[in-house]
Length: 429
Image (cartoon, rainbow, N blue to C red; front, side):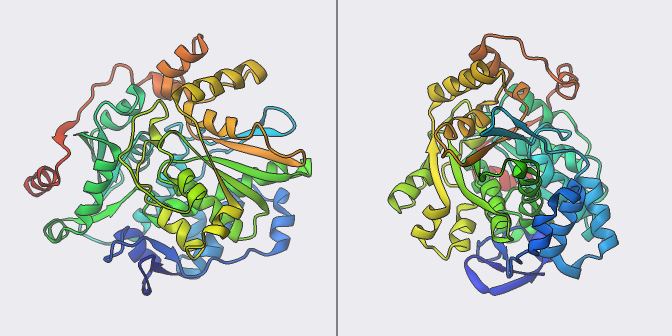
């Protein structure tokens, strides 16, 4: 498997190099040189495959023989050991629930696959691998869980102070061991910028063997494509055209869905669902991409003003705006609209959406008669306990995986959103 930089298609590396480097030296993101089309027979017979078998076939098609079948199956079995069920609200709208993993968020798929893959790649190496990751919410908890106590790997998580939910913060600040949390006085965009700059810092790269667990890393996207196949398998019996509504922040999830479509999955279209940080919906409308400082919302994981993976979407479509808008439409809600959507889903169907999933749900309310819409429920609603309980006026049962965090102590290093401060901290560790 060869991958190229989105800034230079002649800059090619192996899968191991792409995963371990995360970001190309020219600041581009790595993309597979070839996105293979899966055999039509495989798509037709998806019902005969388990989720893990689907994951293996999709990843093997992308990776080829770079990793042996035995090792790839073991990586899949270790990482993808929970389900991605579809809950139908009516005969046209369903929720693809991606929160059945250990951190109760869709990021578990990418984080656990990445952890298993990196652990495989560093076998026999003596130098410790340092993972840098910026989080706007769920990435931090999933990465902390996925990499916890993995030998030879340490994780440093940067998160924006006061801009993640209490339970999200507890998930990434209470583990200790090989997990370190840095609480940044700024936005997610500040955290993401600091991580990207670190990869281009010669001094840090001399001291550390750096990699990233953000969705700039291609190993996050590969497993995120698995559950689109799994979801389509579950709803094909309805005989309708499938539309996926994808709550989006850094746009890794949507990129993975687009890759699944290019591999042959018969998806009619995608909806890029955002909050008021609607940079991509605005681009889809105007053809002009204008990054902006992010604004805080109740759907905090989507508070991103310059989505990293938008570069990959442009690359998939050769910068062709008309081709992009044929496959993707934009949708957004402000906080009031998000709360209204949460109330509507509960009133109509008794379904409790988290704030991100609620935006996806609302975007499907006017789909075509022969369409079946699936919105991605990206995190368990209890992770946004105050917002959900206040909006719905009801008590939400907190799963034990979250309830057990209540009495744990937060451990985080407070830091300004200044790269020099971060650089000094890293050099003095």
